[in-house]
Length: 102
Image (cartoon, rainbow, N blue to C red):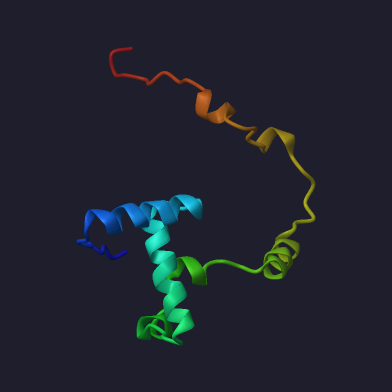
């Protein structure tokens, strides 16, 4: 993630906040949206977009792919309730640590 610092007049700052508020976005998201919208309008593409795909985007599965993966991983073994971990039960358990003094 890169940072972009912008110097502007008070008027520009106020206008940017007003635009963001009207679009229900943060100021940061509004500026990013405006940059992307203008780039799309002018048919400008980033060369970085074509070079590498972000790890987050590449790890996202389509719904169909996810469903197929679940179907393939389904097991035919019977469910064993004693091995199941329900909610935060295991997290809430307390145990005492054995020491050499005992």
